[in-house]
Amino acid sequence: PIPVAPTTVTCNDVTTKWPRKFSICAKTQASLEQSAIDTREEIKVDRRHQIDAAIVRIMKSRRKMEFRDLIAETISQLSAHFKPDIKTLKTRIGSLTEQQYLIRDPENQSVFCYLN
Image 1 (cartoon, rainbow, N blue to C red):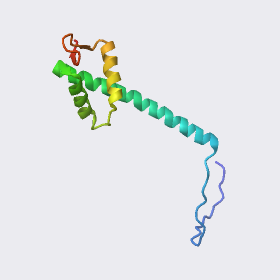
Image 2: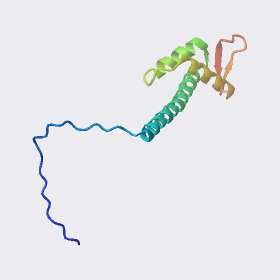
Image 3: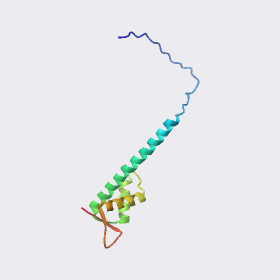
Image 4: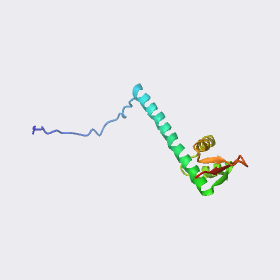
C-alpha cells in the first residue's frame, strides 16, 4: 500500500458570500429538452394502452353500449390515473374497431358491440 499523509480539513464558518449560480451549457439544455420530448411520447404510448385496456374491460362486461355512455364510463375509470382527452378516446375506439374488438350495431350506429 501507498503511504497516505494525514490531511487536515477545516470548516469556514464566517463565509458571507452566497453560493455561485451555474448556467447549464446549451448542449445539456438541448439534451434535457429532447429527453422531455421522449418522455412525453412514452407517456402517450402508455396512456393509449391504458385507454385500450379500459375500453375492452368495459365492453367485455357490458357487451353492448352506446358511444356516449362508453366515453363517460371510460373517463370515469381513467380519471384516477389521468384525464383522458375525448379526441384520443374517439381515435382509440376507432382503432379497436379496426382491430375487430368492437363493431357498430347494424341497427343503431351509435351503439358498439364487443366481439369475442
